[in-house]
Image 1: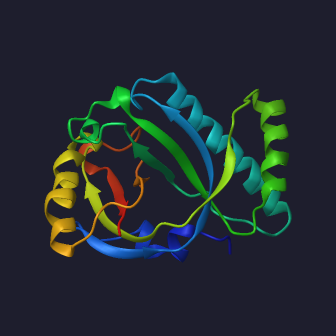
Image 2 (image 1 turned 180 degrees about the vertical axis):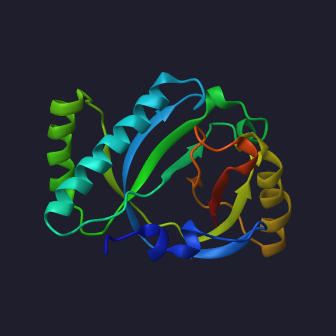
Image 3 (image 1 turned 90 degrees about the vertical axis):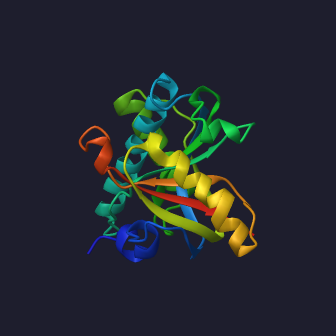
Length: 199
């Protein structure tokens, strides 16, 4: 049975709560690539996501041949801006991001470097995709159902109400896990895990 992060870490990849709650996030490793700009219009964003999946599926195929198969996880992203208000007012051109795809713990740097050569040769993609570990620990998390542009009020509730009630503050980058494909799902039905490390 292939390893599937959505089943192994169900509370993080298939949450049901549509109100903010606290969860503990263990260390994970990801394929990662950085950029900045509006994800709806920046060509660099489209190319970054394409590169991530080219690497992820190349690594998966090699792992499968070794009987170490896994299901490629959903797209994830860390988001920030020099001015936090850029999120609540959705000023996307000033956003910075690191896009991620989770990798099983047994995937190492050697697998990423082998994939880099294969992706460069077969797909003509030369991108600075890297392997990165992330340990977020205690986080506030919610399942948002709806358009990405409707996240503003949900995030405002986190920062204005939930964190204050819990006596907590943000302690890391805003994290999103995309459970739906916006090319195939209408905006009102998109499901996104919103996560904020806290301390």
